[in-house]
Each structure stands twice: as C-alpha cells, then as structure tokens.
Length: 419
Image (cartoon, rainbow, N blue to C red; front, side):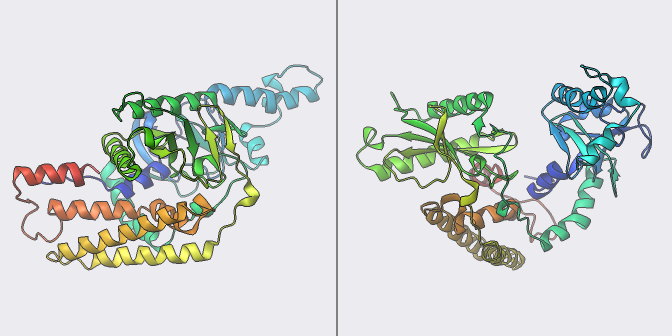
C-alpha cells in the first residue's frame, strides 16, 4: 500500500472558514460586472466555483471575507431589504409612496449606507459576498500554494493562540435554525426527517417514540460555528430489555455506527443522535420538542455564567499535554505514545460525561473544556497522528510504504483511516 497525500483536517477547517473564490482575467483587476451589492471585493463561496469561473481563472482568496457583514439568506431577501429599507428612505424624503431607485442612486451608494450602519460588507449565503474595505488580500492559483501558505504562515500562529468562540455568548439564538425564539418550519422538518431515518437503522420493531428533543448549544446563546446539532430521541428502555445498561450500550453502538457511516451536517453543523431513556434525569438549560413543536425548557441568556480564565487554563494544559506527547514520538515508541493519547482521550470523555450530568449541563466546566479542544482541532490532531503512524508516514526514512496483510489493512481502513 502506498500512502497518498491528503490535506489535514485542521487545514480543511481553516480553509472553510477563511477562504473564498474569485474568477479573474488578471490578478488585482476588477471584473466586468455590475456592483449589485455595492463597490468592493467580490468573492464566491467555496461551494460556488461555477459562479467564479464565469469571470475568468479561479483563484483562492484569503482575507476576502468581511469581518462584520450584513447577511442575507438569498438574493431575493437582499433585494426586498434593499428597496424597503434603503431606497424607500430617500424616496420618502421626496414625498413618494414607493421606492424609486433613481432617488437612491443620485444621493448615495450601497457601500456608504451599509458602512454608516456599521457593516463592512454583504454576504449572500451559499452564493457570494462583497467586502467594502478589503485589507491584505492574498490570491493563490492552486491548492498546493494555498496549503503551503497555511503550513508556513497560519498554522504556527494558530498553535500560539486559542480559539475561544465557545466561551462567547450571543444576544440572539442561532438564525440558522431560529427566527427569534421560534424554530423555523423547514429546519424542524429536516431534523424530524433525519431522526426518523436514524430510527429506522435501529432495526427495532414498533420502536416507541416518546419525544424527539433538539438541545445543546444550537438551542442556546453560546452556539459557535462548530457546535453540534444534538438530537435526543426519548423512549422507554424497559420495553426493549429489562437490563437498561445493555440497552444503553446497544444504542451507543448504533449511534457510533451511524456516525462512522454518514457525515451529515445542517448549515455546516454536524448532527449527532442519542437514544435516551425517558426516565433518565435531564438538566439541559434549553430543550425544544420537535414532536410537539414547542419549547420544553426555554433558554435564558442571563443564566449563563462562565469562568473563562479557569476553563481556558485547564484546556491549555490538555493541549500542551497532547502536543508534547506527539512530539515525543521517535519512530519506534508508537505503543507508548498511542497509549498515552488514548488515556488523554478517555480523561476528556469522562470529564465531559460527568459535566453533562451537572445542573449547569452544557455550560459546565468539563463540557466547555471539551468544546475548546474540539474548536481548536485537537481531536482532529490526535486522529491525524494515529493515521500517519499506522500509514507509515512517521519514522520511515527510506520509504513511505507500509507493508501489512489484508486483514490488518481492512481493520486500519475501517477503524482509523475512515474516521
């Protein structure tokens, strides 16, 4: 087996958050296109390469994303807001009852008005964006150049700082799922549909659904871009088997099988299913019943108290422990190093499980430490290291060929390389 080069998960995460696309005939020149969203640097989302290609050779763009944009779900939403909010303001001053674009164009510009409101750009989700005041914009003609930039200019800085998004709280619930405090109809239908597909994989006849509950950070004010969509399916364990521990472990294995087989996200948030006994105590600070379409436990922003310094300090100790363990690998002591990483993983898992039984639930110290580690890609770092050790990328000076038998390869592929 010859190892093929693959980009690391931490690079992919950074790219998804920081890189956009721009089609250009010449780097640095404006495209011959109308400034529909105002004058500035236009780039497309990574998923919209076809749009970028319309304007020329596609380049990767770093620092093209505005820091504080006005965000719209689609072009139609933008146009309605633009005419009803901006254009109508100037037409009304001239005594007109309806918005007239000529009144706006002779008085001001889109970029000037948006900047007066405190925005530095506009984002149309999944399509494109404009940055009114771009700084230090970098262009890369191919993936390898972009990756090298990340490795030599970004990665070292990331290792020196901690992404503390998880410790922040918002004034509003996540607009990906909620309109104010109401769960959007289309999002509820998506979540229920996926939950029912997951339930089918349980292979249990006449499985009793007591409720399907949406909980976790995405139902509260401390959500981040990395927050999971936690869906808890409540049932009666005793209807399946009197041994509730056996039933619990059965459902955990089903959950893990689903997670390994499917990588499903909603608005880029990974979705995770849990099957829980309805009699098990729940201390979640936010619960939304997807079955009844109403809050069971409505979140309160004033209830969130976070000891940021303590959580950051404890997370940093674990990060340093992981980094030092990986650095200690000398090409031969893989058993010792992998064993140490497994112990660290178990420690983190136990700390999180214990914290989720705390009355503070998702705001408990152990859970927030877990999320800091996840948001800073430390679980990906451990997994990538394990892959490289088993694929022979560490410690082999003459060749990157790892000789294993078919049974060993099948095990590695199913249990390590695919995770």
